[in-house]
View 1: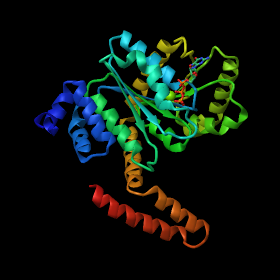
View 2: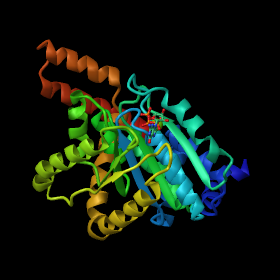
View 3: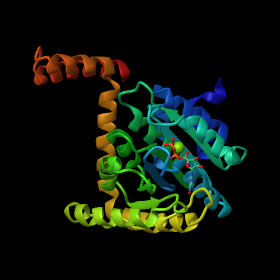
View 4: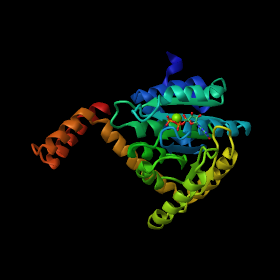
Length: 315
Ligand SMILES: Nc1nc2c(ncn2[C@@H]2O[C@H](COP(=O)(O)OP(=O)(O)OP(=O)(O)O)[C@@H](O)[C@H]2O)c(=O)[nH]1
Ligand SMILES: [Mg+2]
């Protein structure tokens, strides 16, 4: 099919043709060589979009917030690409279905592109696919690219950091048992959104965040992340949040282009390595090491060999 040649698809993306964007997105999701080739070609056209990572505990209102941010950006005439990374873990409540329902108002809008990426059963490769999708949407001239991940595991949290700026969404009324989640999320936040501020406890949560910041940010030598109260459900505070995102992102970009790419390249390396390792094999070695039937260094040697074999097949 001549219209699906790499050249034609690249040209389609460059002129923001949505059918081409959708086809390339599928090529990326299916981890095809053509998808990767296209992203390589399109990379020189990227750099225009602001990418925003939105992460936070399950049910914090991330999708609702993404929906509202999209509304605000659309009212400005901006085009918005959304990538919802769904780990299909027991922690999420059918995120894909929920996202579809909540995003429905934007579905008919040709200037909003939504892609849910299921990660079930994949050990690695998620960071790489996510970055490829984000670059695709950037090349297709979307002004904002929003990446939603559920901030439960470290991997998910790291994916939100592939963006130019990371917003951590927290909600009042969690028990003390989520302190651990919060601690993991503290380090990645450029901005905190205290959502569901219509519920009691928003002030207390804000105080807790500031108290934790006073402990962690000194050591991290990182600017203190602003805290914003929002009611995503009603849209309150969302325009202000977007303005803050832009301000913080502008500051960050000035100082940390190479630093951000160093982080991204590291994530890509890890992602690619784990994409070539079978999860079952990793678990098998872990079992052998735990049972003292194998030492961890030999296990790593064997996993590395597996990666080299797979890596060659992959290339
Ligand atoms: N009271 C109140 N409820 C909200 C607010 N924002 C979102 N919700 C509700 O919180 C629930 C979860 O919202 P989602 O947007 O699906 O949350 P999420 O963080 O995307 O959830 P996962 O993707 O499953 O982790 C929904 O029932 C929303 O209607 C808010 O500002 N106030
Ligand atoms: Mg969601």
